[in-house]
Length: 207
Image (cartoon, rainbow, N blue to C red; front, side):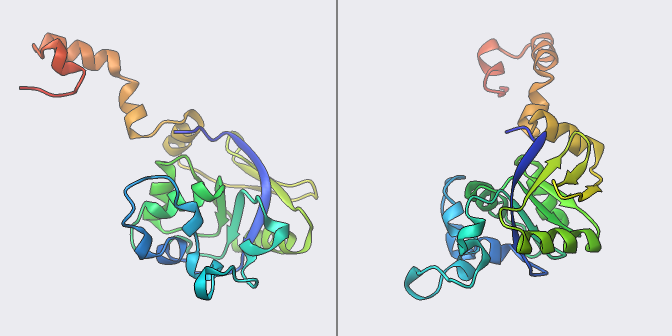
């Protein structure tokens, strides 16, 4: 998993509340077996109109937000069904973080396991970031997980809180497998002590 320490990027404003996972990645694309390639389907029903033509009224189709890597959105982002594909789609599209005043718990948990940062600010702070992203050309923000701070070059600065264990995992690029492998030597010693054949130790199998 890619570590998240400090990221600076252009901000795209999605001025909608209750953005659910079926809008982030519609259900018809969940049949894919890969973890990559979902970016082209991100917000598909909003980004495209009939015959797959780009919707000129959707924010991510505006030239000024091309290459944005930070998304700011209304409250309750990521609600709905628990599909990890939603995080895969955001990441594959190029986003590294999303700023909102609240997130669905399952979406936030899936984000953590994929090196994607959910930044929870107050409603007022989110509104200010939204306003700047809409009104300032090439508006960029720095998301600093080391300092737990979001800031720009125009005087905006806001602290955000992150569970310390989650922060540790993100800063060090540790998913569940990475956390386990931190204890690889102890696991190997335990297996050797309990008579697990060497060939099976590598495969994590017993029998």
